[in-house]
Image 1 (tube, rainbow, N blue to C red):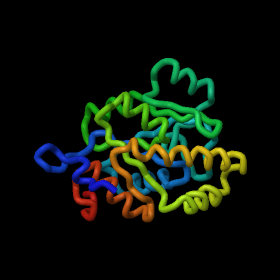
Image 2 (image 1 turned 90 degrees about the vertical axis):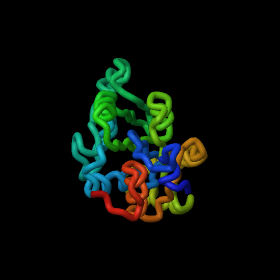
Image 3 (image 1 turned 180 degrees about the vertical axis):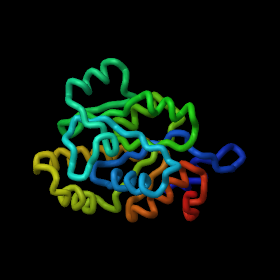
Length: 205
């Protein structure tokens, strides 16, 4: 795993914060759990809210986890250039509204996007200086356990996610930093350190 301070360092070796960070990785690795923990504990980190056509899961709220829309509305947003990135995954559309990200970049401060690998690649093209972080599972067996243990999706969807996860794991080398999700608390500390340029063992203020 790369050293967060080294990855975001300036030419003088002084850590500098990342303007826009993308957290990605295979389905089921725990990206949403990490983002939820950051939402609760790190109010200084701005979190982009994606648009999706999938149905809300229990406990999810409109405008918090996602903006839930119909397929026609989503396709209109994509066609009119309102999305920074978008993709169809496991039968549903997912995308990032462009305007809130642009406003955050203008204002400064750490911003975080939670995306799949396809979305991360699109952001790299649109925002070349974004920091891409790959969240990896401790093992393939653990990833399978997490995906099959959700009990929120039918077997055919789980099968598609497992197939996609194999391909997504092969994309790790395209990212700037890899964090292994053995502990949500540790990953959050490391991720916030990357975004704010503070040591990983120093709580965010």
